[in-house]
Amino acid sequence: MLHLASKSPRRRELLSRLGVRFGIVDVDVPELRAGGEPAGASVRRVAREKAGAGLLQVVAVPGAVVLGSDTEVVLDDEVFGKPRDEADAAAMLRRLSGRTHRVISAVSLVSQSRE
Image (cartoon, rainbow, N blue to C red):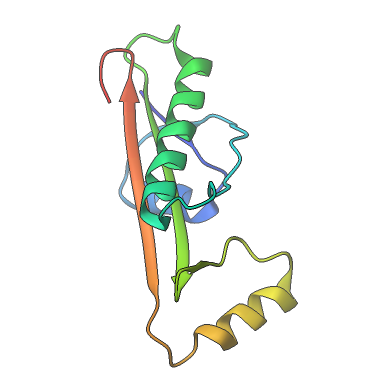
């Protein structure tokens, strides 16, 4: 069975719309970029850490597979992170508006035997 290691309602919606049956595992993985770590490397690392943390919770479930994911918005090498509130989200959108920026996502799929 697939287990989603994410609190993102969008990821839940996407899997549901695809008709994928899945469970949710609640993981608490810091989404912090290490000093000097490129944004893409950070996103890949966090996705792997989420999947690994989720796998630890369902390791006794036969055939368990865990999906971890992370996404960041980057403008001029500044990683935006999650907005604190609606006002912060609006400020972020104003800064991004009309400017070329990157949205970086990574997905990690793990089971007891593979990554």
